[in-house]
Length: 66
Image 1: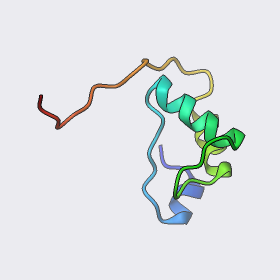
Image 2: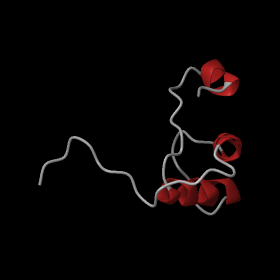
Image 3: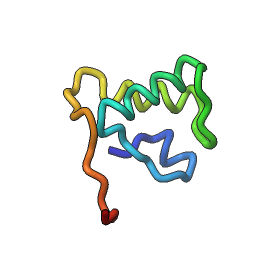
């Protein structure tokens, strides 16, 4: 789901798909961590989208061979 704010900014909307990403966005929203290109308001908006959803701990990484 692309939010109006993401469309307005012109950047690609990347949803939160795992618990580890949720924790990272929570740290950004609290101000303890900074990510280039992601404001505190954007982090809070993304967290509102996934409120109440059950997410996996991690997602499988695609495109990497070991």
